[in-house]
Length: 269
Image 1: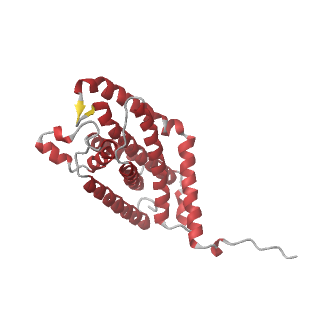
Image 2: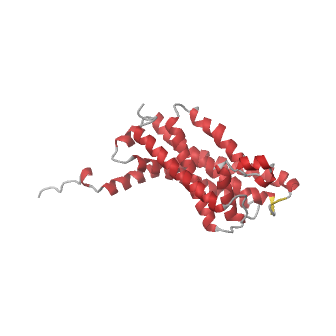
Image 3: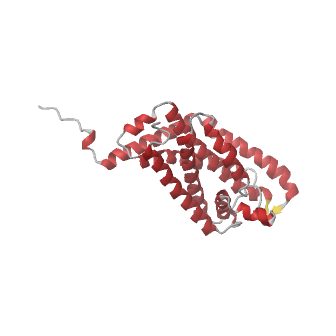
């Protein structure tokens, strides 16, 4: 009896090949997150606890209420979102740069996968880590304050979109980074200042008029406030505008990153 020939890769439908490739990247990212959980999940929980103790419990008692809420309750959504932003960004920038540095990014480039799918795989990994960290920090927040959920859909939509935006930002950073020092430049000199000035710890309505107007140029302000509105029903900005800005940022970032990948920028040099 003649042996049944094994199926050939070229005979498989394109969607199946792409799906398997996407799942392979996603499983690798998931395994990386879980394998080094002491670096990916524990530090955000400890940092959040310190923020709640220092800013919420100690300083917050002197500040009192903000926008009708206890100060610790007011900053809780901002601290959760800050953790999501930094971890989504950090996961993708370190993972993709690691692939470049370890020279195994070539395996992805020669695989029958379009560049947009590779980007989606890494961004999905950043999204997973961002959401897990967000849940961890939310659990920490509940030890310190009650956190109502006024609009569940807005909470979910805002955190997912924001995580996608900064996962794409991490990919963008990793494309141009040539060494490990350069993957920390953007978080240190751009991301951190924008996050701290994005209304995490205060309402921009308390600022002088010129500073309040300047704050509205910060996209993170809209993301933090949309997330806070989902929990507390309070926001310094129009939530519709916040979502429009976040979606636009995601679309533009995705288009830019895929274009750079198609050109081989930072990879085939």
